[in-house]
Length: 164
Image (cartoon, rainbow, N blue to C red; front, side, top):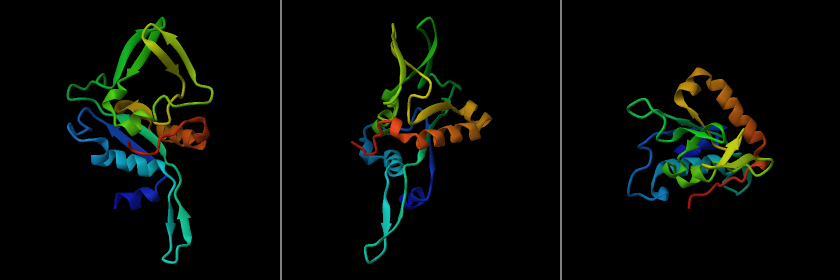
């Protein structure tokens, strides 16, 4: 049923939380990676005679990071001092692989540099950008429109559409 609803959508918002992944199950055994995969793939609907009726397109994507039980986002978005300034470390190991593979995947004109903490990206660097819940609810239209702009520039990203 979700696949049918995703077919007609244009934006997918993924909520990231400390318990979003069920421990002990592979990604392909959980439903969130499948929803993301369906959202990223172009699929067509056919008539009984086999003629194509409509085609879905890759959805714009956004990850909204929810606070943990203490109101903190640092389980995923951890503020650091690096490169003589401030940066945010994304703990992508906490994500499903399909989300992780669509983070830091800008292939055309990426803005990045190497610092003592590793590679630091700046600007729009991920197809699935992450935003804190408190920022999202403060200006959700901005973040949705930013996701749509990334979708409209999808050729600038190396998109992973399948579950491993």
